[in-house]
Length: 530
Image (cartoon, rainbow, N blue to C red; front, side, top):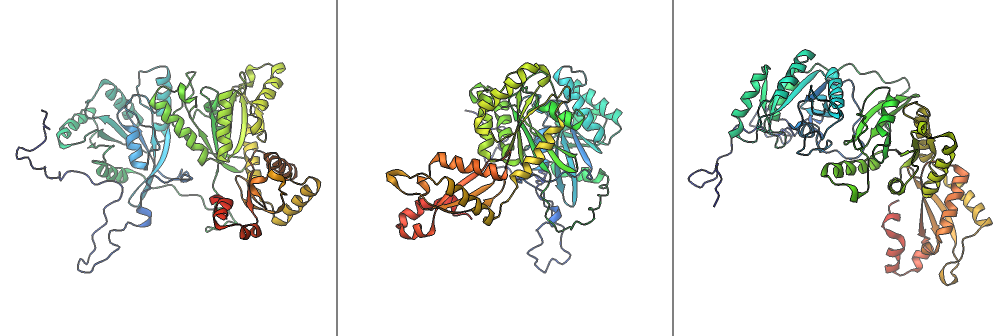
C-alpha cells in the first residue's frame, strides 16, 4: 500500500503554505486609509487593472506602443504555459513534447495599471540546424524587438548545457534578463530553483506557470523594469474618439499542409514573419500579424495545415487543426490556398464547405503558379471551379510566393469582397426587385398543388448578407427556386465572394390561422431573432 510522502504523521491535512503566491488574475487591492468605514467597492479593481482572461470574439487590437517582453528558453521548459498564464485563456498550443511552438506569437498582458505585450518563442538551441535552426532565427528576431527578456528554465531537470548556451546569447543581446525557474510546484522543489543562479543573472524567480505559483512576484519585477509606453499617434482629423471603429480586416489563410500559406504571408509582409520549411505541418499555432496596405488595416492570420481527421496521428496536429478551424469564426475573409499543381481535391472541397458554413467571405488562391505550365493553367482553374461548384461566388486568384506574381491582388480582392459582404439593400429597392422576379417567374406549386405566395423581403443582416422572405408556405418553397432567387440577387447587387442566406418565414396572417403548435414549428427559433 502506497502512502504520500508529504502526508504528516498525525494524519491531519497540512496547513496551507504561506509562500504560495497569489494568482495573477487580480492584483491585490490597496488597503483603505479608514478601516472603520466599510466600502463595498474596496476589493473591486480599477477598470484598467482588470486582466483579460479568455476573452472571446474579436481579439484586442495590436498595441505597438506598449513595451515588449520576450519569453526565451530551450525547448519544453514551459514558455507557452507561461504565455497563456500572462495573456489569459489558451491562445498558445501546449503539449509535453519539445518543439511544439515554432513561430513568434504575440499577446497582451495587464498587471495592475501596467499594460505590456508578450511574445512566445520557439525553443532556442544555438547549435541546432534544420527546422530547429529556422526556429532559432525567429527567436532571435523576437529578441531584437524585446525591451525585457524572461529566461525560462526547467527547475526540475536543472541547468543544462543548452541553458548555458542560451544564457551566453542573452548576455550578448544587452537586454535586461529575469530568470523564471519554472515547474516549482511545491515547497519541496523550491531549492531546485537555486541552481539557476549559476547562469550568472542576479534575479531568479521560482514559479509554476501551470499553477500560477510565484507568477505575481515575477510580474512585479517585470513591471518595475519595463520602460514607459511610447507616445501613441493622435487620431486623424475629422474622427471622433467616441466613434465605434470596426477594426482591421482579418484575413485568414487556410488550406492543406505545405501549400504555401506561410510563404504568402511572408511575401505580403516583406519579411520572414512566420517559419517556412519544406516539412509539411511546419505551422502549428495561428499567427496574427497586423499589416497596412492601400490605406486599409489588415490582420493576416497564418493557420496550420488541415488534413482529414483519420490521417491525423498526433495530439499536437489535432489541436492545431482545431485552432485553425476556430479562426474561420473570427476572421472577416477566408482565403483557401490550394496547390496549383494538384488543383482542388476532395480535402480542399471539405475545407471550402467549412468556409461556406461559417458564412465568411471567401477567396480561392491557386498558389505555386510558377510550377505550372501556361498550357495547364486554364485546365487547373477549370477543374478547381468544377470541384468547388458550391463556392462559385468566390474569386479564383493565381499567385506565386516565389516570383511574387499576383500576391498583392489578394489584399485588393479581400478588401473588395469584404465590402460586398457588408453591403445593405433598402427594403423598398429589394421588394421592387422581388416583384419583378415573381412577375417573370412565380414560385412553383408546393406539395398537393399548394399555391405558394411570396409577399415581401427585407435584409436582416450583413456578413453574410441575410434576407428574410415572407411567404404563406415556407416549407413548400422548392430548393431550386431558392437558388434561383439567390442568383437573381447576385445578378442585381453582386455580393461577390459572400454567401447569401435566405430565410423563409410564414406570413402573419397565415400564423394567426394556424394552431398554436403549428406556429412554433413554422416560425422557428432563428427567424424570431430579428
